[in-house]
Length: 584
Ligand code: G6P
Image (cartoon, rainbow, N blue to C red; front, side, top):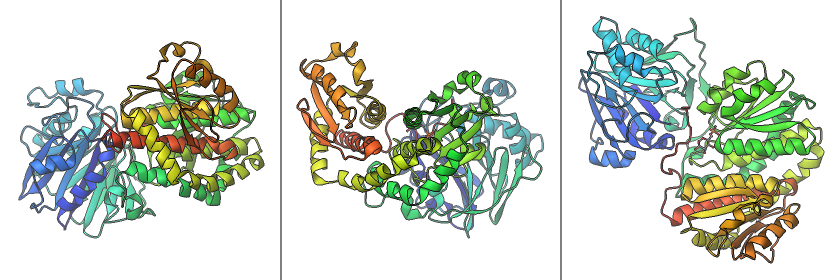
């Protein structure tokens, strides 16, 4: 949802910021723009398109500048075009702003700025004009930025560069912003990995923080608190861990990281899960929530809780206020989020004050990790592919373990985790790749595909169908296999492909359903531990007891990736999507 990076220091900012903004493209990639100091004036280059395309039109590799702000956009207000690309300036062109968020009182603010000339359809432009208005009344840049921030309603983090002084300003309100403290200067960015090559010394900004980045240091004040308390964190991630390395795409790198993550969870992740389970009252109700893939992981958690005799339900994050009336103070809500910044979740937090909150969150310092009673670290490492892969499997496994620990039945599940950690390596063998390639070639030109399964296999089907939609642009629908005969069967003809998930336990019943499809000429792709006579194509998954569904999910991720690549789509940057959606 828009990426911001800025720098002020004694080195040339341009190579740092070009590199950093390319790293932030997972947050949005509709348009790119930058503002930098050019001998006391503000120079701006921007257009619709990816960073490298815009910079090939407007090269800046010969530029030397000590301070700048760069932006990659995921459009919310105004079409994707050059004018609406950030930075947006005031009437004089002396104040440039890049922004991540949505200004909810835009009309009201614009009405206060009748004598200003607006050129774009963005909400962001109002920030530069508000600062201009304050400065024209004699305010310093710093106090103009502060009083402007106080007027904005909604989630609005932004950075400002002006020719009126030598600073870079950064405001955190909603969307994430962090400072990176390098020897040569200070970075501000939407995330840590964007500047990790240059420093791992980080200050996580809090809501209401206004940071002033000078050439030789920084200062933070907070609009709501007198003494903002900021410590410097040494981030443990290494640059190599977040780099694509030899892989063509982050998506395949992240798919292949899963066996090692499962092993790490087995070796060192269990004590924290046990601790979280100790906070849950097993005779009250457990609500689980999330958005997108994280919601589907929440459904796995709810399924496993119920299977273990615990009252549980998964609710979509935007429905939290609706379900609040059912919750009591003995209940627990488990909030799943890779980014910890998804607006649908964050906006619902106020409605559940007083309810115990456990956050299963991958991002340290995120709004959600900081707002829950207990942060259970997903520990999956940074995920850069827009489509969730390793964070989905990590969440689904951790929630399964949490369910068994809460019920006091962990002894039943730990052998299965050990089996998974061994057998998951057997997925990535040549025969598997050959089978997946064959199926990918069949699906490539399809417009519709069904994914079916029963019980936990249906939950795998939900996530698998989302992957194919996201990265391969194929309309994919997930159905409980038992429901297929109640309507969808009318769609079956010789062109219809149905992917069937069959773990051992659910296999026999699903088998009847695929026979019904097969006898009407539909084609069946089976992802299963054993072949079935109804399968037209068979991709062998690996047994792992209660975790067998994880091996099937990993195969479906690989399948979606392969179809995406065959269709020449960039799976890391699917059209219209962003990794972290920080608007309603
Ligand atoms: C976006 C992403 C999805 C993700 C969802 C929830 O829609 O494109 O891949 O599952 O947000 O994100 P979260 O960070 O809360 O897990």
